[in-house]
Image (cartoon, rainbow, N blue to C red; front, top):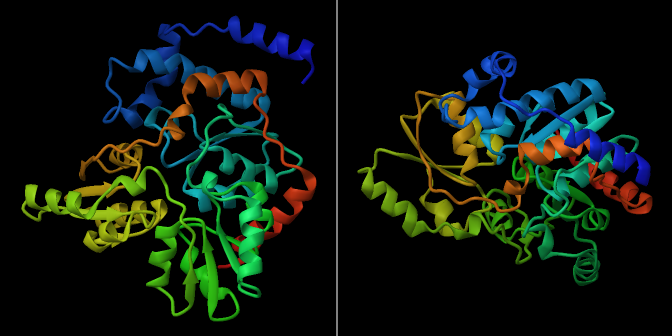
Amino acid sequence: MSVTEQAAARAALAELDLSYTPAVAEATRPIYERVKDVIPAMEWPFHAPLVHAINRLKREKNAVILAHNYQAPEIFHTVADIVGDSLALARRAVDTDADVIVLAGVHFMAETAKILNPAKTVLIPDGSAGCSLADSITAADVRLLRQKYPGVPIATYVNTSAEVKAESDICITSGNAVKVIESLPGDEVLCIPDEYLAKWVATQTSKKVYTWKGHCEVHERFTGAQLRDYRGRFKGDITIIAHPECPPDVLAEADFVGSTANMQDFVEGRQPKRVLLITECSMADNLQAQNPDVEFVKPCNLCPHMKKITLSNILESLVTLEPRVEVDASVSSRARLAVERMLAVK
């Protein structure tokens, strides 16, 4: 976008009327019905004008919003077109016929969308929305691992940069890690960079799994002692569901371990009376809106990177078509192979 185009976009943004008018209230009333159990009525007048403007701009610009499960309810349930965990977003990103993709998540997710859609405009509303796990490993690290473990397949979590994916044989997510690793040849595998996910995978496969000391700053803060305390507090009348990025002592205390999509399926399918979700706390809010009969106990570990995405910067991104995500062609082509190999595993 040229300097002149950027100036015009900024001027258009400044001219937007974001008043909570009766017309906006009426237009967004059905949307609020979906979130009334998790967004107080007094907050809706602040969200509604942004929601209304975003949904209008999506139609005008043939744009689609992909939102991760850890996004706040006012994003997840009101403006997102495609929602889910990393695997779901990767799969659905390939299928969209939109010209513009807005990724309401973190940077590696936007990179993955761009890798799979090189001809489309891919936006991330805040370019600084990173990931501690992605930051834990570099492409140079992967090349050194390949030297150290010659011939051993390298399965890399999608929670990594495009450069790291490009050095890998195949990608995995927490939802398909075991299935993908079982599909690889040989009796050994490098499962990187999440140490705890790799250790959990090792309990689910006969392969020897080599790990890397990368961690999610949200999930690594949970402890087994916390879970035991919750069980005591509720006299055992609670179902604990944990993400495999949590430490082993946490997973040992859980009733169910699974990806965010697996967690959602468990709650929706079994409708437990009371649930403790051991993951980023916005997911509990999002599931609460869809499962009003389930009581969610919410230990609130927030992802500071996910929370950089807001309705305001989504709107700004749609108006200005910035910040754009670009991936070098030589990196993108190799990273795409790793992602496509993952998507081909059924």
